Amino acid sequence: MVSRIIPVDPFDLVVFGGTGDLARRKILPALFRRFCAGQMERGTRIIGAARTEMDDVAYRAFIAEALIEFNEGKGGCEPGKIKEFQKILSYVTLDARGELGWSELSEKMHPGRVRAFYFSVGPSLFGDLALRLHQYGMADSDTRIVVEKPFGRDLETARALNKSLADHFDESQIYRIDHYLGKETVQNLMAIRFGNMLFEPLWNSQYVDHIQITVAETVGVGGRGDYYDRSGAMRDMVQNHLMQLLCLIAMEPPSHFDPDAVRDEKLKVIRALGEVDPKDIVRGQYLADDEKPGYLEHVENPRSLTESFIALKLDVVNWRWSGTPFYLRTGKRLKSRTSEIAVVFKETPHNIFDDDNDRHRNILTIRLQPNEGIDLDVTIKEPGPGGMRLVDVPLDMTFSEALGPEGEDIPDAYERLIMDVVRGNQTLFMRGDEVEAAWAWTDPLIAAWEKGATKPIPYDSGSSGPEEALALMHRDGRKWRDLRI
Image (cartoon, rainbow, N blue to C red; front, side):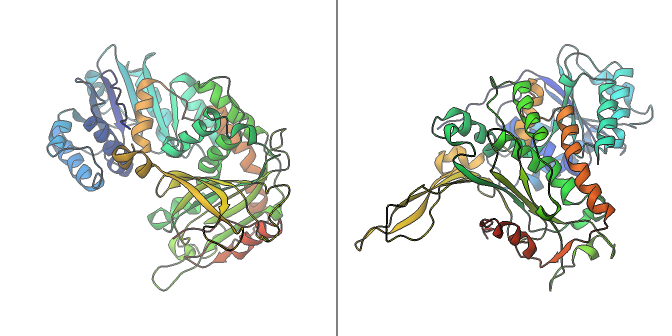
């Protein structure tokens, strides 16, 4: 199978925070890989902008080092391509809240082409950047701005953030990026659901027993201790990443594959989320082990009540999903790095195999990481003589194997999302009302445990989380899927 590379017209892309960690690790390496793939036409320009004093030559050398470090193991880039890529790079020393550098940046813009401005900076600077883009004549109908999470820390700050952008740009020009939505498997989820007659008739409470969404990490909070202790797993992961996965699983088929049609259906899911019983929420903090400190040591706050793990049971209160629970969990310092969605179908209504006492279920598993792919567990006869013994086996479509050489180098989420910005396709980006609806649902849960000063439950590093999270499923006669090592 040969993947098609569709070039985009020449564009100008400015990366505010162009010397920052995100630019070095993700944004510029993603652009470099699209350059190597031949997706950028001659004349495209990428401009870094930050407070750091630097000229074009120094910035090109700075980015070359980043590409060598963070593009290791990625195919498709021939030796010598870095030098070619450097030719489209330039740099402006700029003050987001002052006047330094803005005139110089404005002079670099090409008229009559798409201009994308990536706000790879803290949210407190979004409004200042948006204002100055207008003041210096760099904003027109072909201008797009890209903003990273966090999109606020509650409903109030999210509304203020949205207003600071809406004061200067239309919603159609604002791209709120969530890299999870750029993963190949997440997009394939929509193709599987809405492109195959096999699944959609079964995608409801009549046939689905429950759905599990897991995002597990083996690392701790590391150098993000100060930020993380003010956020926690609920704000950092559930309110955005896991919420988006939930929406794609639970949404109704849109009338057509159009950005607003898709986002309208996602918004309906968020608004259909029921109230969560406190007993259906488990929060935890990882403990130290022989080699690494625990959460309290990492954040240097022995009285911290912030969770590094959360598991919860949700209900989508609508016709399709009434009676089918959704179980979500995410955490730091767990036994494996795993991100997956498991759609667990109900058992057959009657077992005709009298000698088989095991429970057999079809499970559709969408693996986001590692090894992006899709499994469908089916029940078959175990090979060999000796009667009808049943066994569950997976029908495995690991993309790197199923798609041949092209599957070994599936584009990174940032590659796809940045190119979608240039094309003007907002399907995989969050809309302002979607962000606010997610916070409106999240805020009461956070407020309840903050008011009660509820202390998270300690759990061992390298485990599956607190035992109470296992009990959350066990009392419903279900169990979490194993975190694969």
